Amino acid sequence: MALAACSTFDQQSAAPIVEGTAQAVPLPEAAPPEPAAPLVQPEPELHEAKTDSDRAAPKKPHRSPQRATATVSSPPTAQPMPTPLVASRLLYPGQVKGLLDTEVQRPDGKAIGHAVDLVVDANGVLREIVVNLTGFMGVGDRKVDFPRGALRVKPVGPRVAGALELVPSRTPPIDPAKPAQAGSTTSGTVPLMDTTVQRTNGSKVGRVVDVLIDAGLRPQAAVLELGNLISADRRRIAADWSALRFVARDKAIQLLLDLSDQQLDASPSYVADQPIRAVSPAPTAARGTPAAARQPAAPAGRASR
Image (cartoon, rainbow, N blue to C red; front, side, top):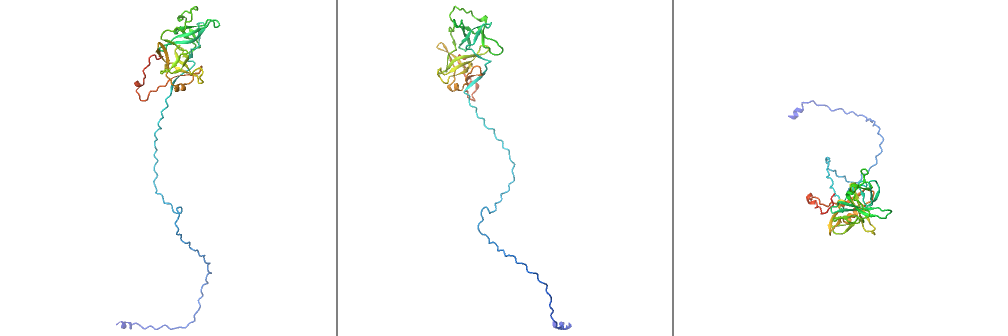
């Protein structure tokens, strides 16, 4: 049946065969050959281990910046100040003057002598002033004790003058025929010049060589000479009058001053006509001690001011 279907189509004749000559087709001219690129030998792969410097540094983890917080430093602890060995009180030459060798005058200004000593009682109160009355060219000089009220500081403005003046209404009559009156001090008093000052334990501190008085004839300080006459480190200091104690022992009055050798070394030297530092023992009360417990009992015979 299939074959029958094919027979129905027309038979196509075969194409005639024509003989022809072959014609050459021109070819395009070939471009000149390009120079060959040099062969690059591939570098052999290095298998050596890389050094730490060749290795890529590891990336640091990213951290967000933090706000700087201001730190409040605590104040430094205050160091305790060293405890001073001595306390001092400043006195000026215009406020005080040395009593020793001060000129004594009559109200008319005529000089009659010089003060050479003073006498105090067991409370440190000035009672008498010893005056060396001047004779004619040194002949007939004698010492006389004048009561405190018989003399006064010669007023010259607010400063302490350089002379003492007799008060006629209070000056006892002086009989030239009588012998010298100095040295006849009443019981319970003591002349100060050349008196030895001791500590409570009996050791020597120094000797009194002068007393500084104010415009009211009130003693403010005692000038002490430390060391003996042949000592190389002999010098003078001013001891505050309030630091001296006058104690009655064996029917005599002794001067006490509790200054150790270290405190004496720390005391400034006394120089006449210059600002004076009157020294006294520094308070050694411990901190935290109640005031009532720190307050020492006033010793008997302590100088009152």
